[in-house]
Length: 81
Image (cartoon, rainbow, N blue to C red):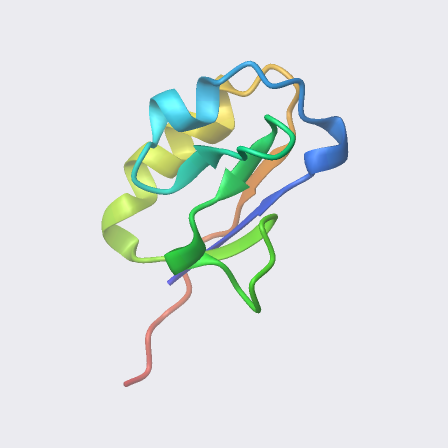
């Protein structure tokens, strides 16, 4: 699993993250800032999520594309089932 965080306070609402990785990020309808889709949220938080390894490419793309540098993608964590 991959852990992703978004510093929503620094988000500039540019749309790069949800354009780069729409499977994971959305524009929050309440404030227009970047949020993590509900099904990936950790403890219901819009700024912290857990993603499957298959999304690593688009998550890294969103992290790199963000001009405000508010997205952090952790290294892939080994899965112990």
